[in-house]
Length: 106
Image 1: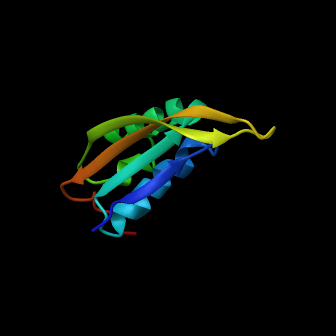
Image 2: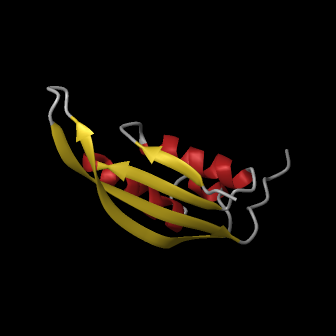
Image 3: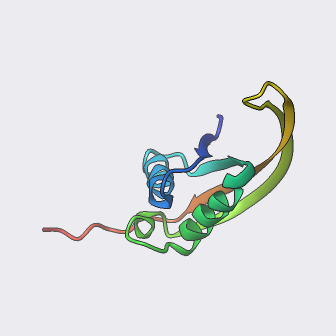
């Protein structure tokens, strides 16, 4: 089974936390966050917020979310001017464990 990959870009952090939550609620408890270049720090922030369950969205994640792995790499991309350049790539693997919090009944 392949892992769900969430590519981190320039959207607000809560968008990516919500994507992690939706994937985990669908049963995919192992997720890779992938970011390139300047978005790497945003991926680290998303992982930490999920791990600490910080914020309303993250509080709905499973009981435990851990960083199960980090991998760095680089890839060659084409610039707008048509030149090749190297860009750093970071993959953060998250793993959810335990039960999801119970929603309060209306």
